[in-house]
Image 1 (spheres, rainbow, N blue to C red):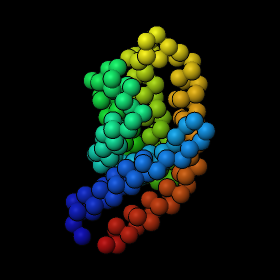
Image 2: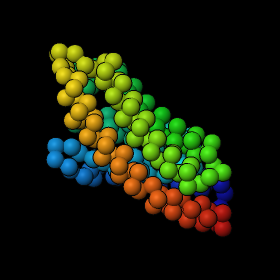
Image 3: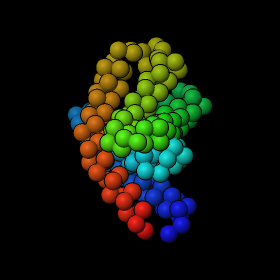
Image 4: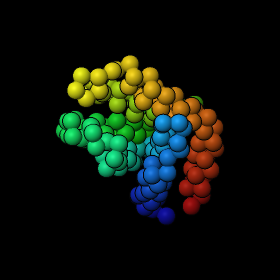
Length: 182
């Protein structure tokens, strides 16, 4: 099979899986945890930075149509669109760059690349909230935002992806070995 066909097919598969997982969140109290960051990391690790960026941008586009984003869109539409696309797009791009940069040690590469996704995604969201959305009329309390919404969500997403990292390492080995044989 042609490498470009493998690249497009694999990227489409992981993107579709990420979108599906976005719409099937796990409820943990008031928080909604989605696992779409796992296939985002896999797309970036297996296929590279650009497929990671592509998958991340599409996830960011899905975030824009999520009802929870509507208040942000009403308050500052330009920044909301930019932030939603950048946080997941750059998370995928950076994950792919890390995987490419540490490719001589696959387990380390996969683990560091995987955990970079929630770090970048949540980090950019937090910085964006601090710069553009924290004020008395929209989000009056930065402490509440960071301790509950962002903080707990980050801890859970980071923990899930860190716990799944050995599984991701295993999946990467299987997928890359099968791709080499095909």
